[in-house]
Image (cartoon, rainbow, N blue to C red; front, side, top):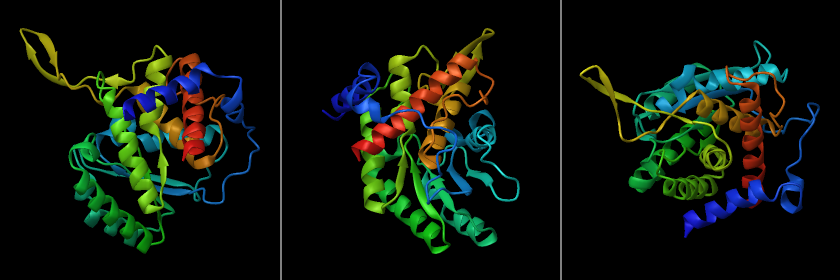
Length: 266
């Protein structure tokens, strides 16, 4: 049932443009005021989903630069990641990072399917990291991750898990997973990068589970972060992440529409 709700959400988002709800998802000018809770110094906490393709924080920062929102000495973006890690592995490092440098926000995500297969662990770990962040004056923010390629049913499960946690924690949720689902539904763009397992007689053999982001996937995630944190539409920004400009613009649009629709539904 939850998967059907997500399918309906995506259909509504992209097949009803120009009327009703999407009229509220209009473009915003570059002069739109930033929200009062806009964080200038952000620590991204996660794993390979964050550090792939030169880092989500780097692409997000370049979007800020393209929008003239990044100022050296004022904005700072860093990532604290372990490969294959879940949130439960980060408390000590997060506490150390926050002691050594003040941060406005901590954007965090769990292991790819962690919230689905280890719900109680996800709850306890997100509680712990949120408490640590707030004790040092940083706002905790959850980044909803995406379904594995070919496993679209994960979208609804992850969306519910992150949304429920966001409400319980009083924390913003960045709906990257929903943006992946929407882009997969409406665009001919490969958002994934398969993992190489080995070579057999010179032929590469890839992992059956495809979950890591391609450059397009990381760029879409960065655009979604941009839309959620700045409240602005990234569509038209000249930073394309090395992608074809039309592809980048399509991903910018999907990110903004997804964030606006998700926030409307919460």
